[in-house]
Image (cartoon, rainbow, N blue to C red; front, side, top):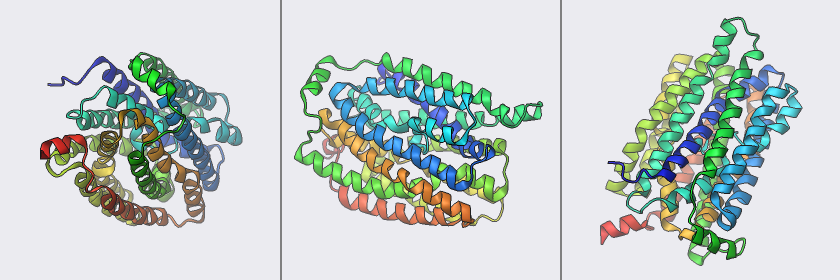
Length: 407
């Protein structure tokens, strides 16, 4: 049944799962933990913004070097650096030191659980995929990422349980930070086991640092513009969902972890649906259709009268939340030449990372003054304009599998 499940794809799935697990933990507890050690909402936003700057650097430099020197090396070195960043949470509680020490891991926004090395991961996965199976394999990657995010979110309930057993509030976070450090280290070891075609690697070394065909430049510029608008909205809200529950309803981190865990489990339902939808109506149409219910629920979320209603809206929204991610990734890999995939994916991802430099700080200011609904409304409007522009740009550009089916 799963003929495409090769050794290298299994390793890539394992690497993604561990990274997503850690991102799931960060999403739930990072902002709350920083608040508990004395950071104001403004400085929490600045911390996420600095992490976003790091993500942009990883995306730009990493994707360019990946096509030249090898993609698995980027995954390996990221794992080692992220291990060091996670370990810093065990070593200091100084807000300023933490602001700087956790930034290189670039975990401010989830990005479907890929972290800032998604372009290298996508290019590697495409290398081991056929055009017919590519969308299904990317859906499987996103499925593993969503499970990792879910387990990480559930794990964020551990500090609450330890506090109930008598541990101090801040000490209760230390075991989970230790688990994160270990998971990042194992992810780097797994990355070194992934095979990369030697002849293709030699060809990449002979290429210029940045060398794209005319067709790829056009596609990359369109991916950049739409990604910039999309993530300007996403980064207004994604790093702060847990913090918003904490500020709006004074929710316990354990309860927030449960909500987020269920949220990501529900998201896994969407991936098989996304694959079937893309085969029936085309991948670009499927991306457009999947975003509509998500945007409606995102707009409604901040107006929830109590935490019960907010949780229900949040969880239904979660079913559609990252449904389009494997479709976008597969589509990008499908229409771009093999030797340029990591570079174009990096340009696209850079556009989605660049707003993280500014948007979280803006949200921090808004949350500081207490206008809690505004980031959600702004995000919904920006993402609506993005999906309409994406459809305009790409509705006539078919990936190889759709061209074959049509012929």
